[in-house]
Image (cartoon, rainbow, N blue to C red):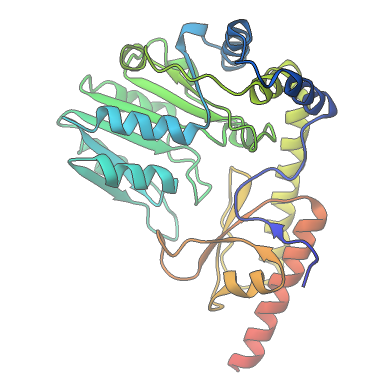
Length: 334
């Protein structure tokens, strides 16, 4: 049993923020009795706009992209059919089930987890809100291309939100399409690639149709979060180096598990891997030795687990623990 649990269950980045980011957040604590300055809020909006390649008016910030997604579903659920995929980002699924008067869930089935474009397009014959995570969580798979997004936004009664929480790992974005398509919005987060999960910085790159509805959506971020985000965006190369480290580790784990185990480990465009295991209660067995991963039985068939990519030492501990558990199970089974 490890002294401290290894958290590979929340898709956090294992590498801490830079010293400059930490120092900027620390300094802001001296003014914690004051609200955030409006000019700092505007500065963050400008930096997010520059980073995303859109005018500042298209940026809406929020303490977490999950809050934005929930608010979008709540706002548009009356009078519109909600279309999602399954599996998907679980808070989105929960919000859709809570607020939708009519909900369509398109199944992504193993082993390929592909999105059937015809099934989706067939649903767009009435006013809809389509929410798709790209890459998909928990499969790690790219579901959309530009042609598909173009086909969706051509339906004027359809609003589409693409959740790009893992954009920095995939490099796939449709943010440049927002200005020409008012019914398109992109949600993103700085929780993941920017190592700011504890700061809770989310934002939406919104088309005009969304801007009209969210014109009064004004969220004041806490000073430390605001200052950390500004500093992080001033030097995005630090984030990009960490993303490269995560991707290298992801591919290393994928290769090790595929070379040594006869179970599916799915290719990913994110900072996590989807694995299918035959070992009963793999999540519990790993937790017993201090390694936390995600059980996906609430959305996928039995045996599917999701493992976040940690640092090398954490990943080695996971690989060793996982393979020992598999080896023990094989001996007991036969």
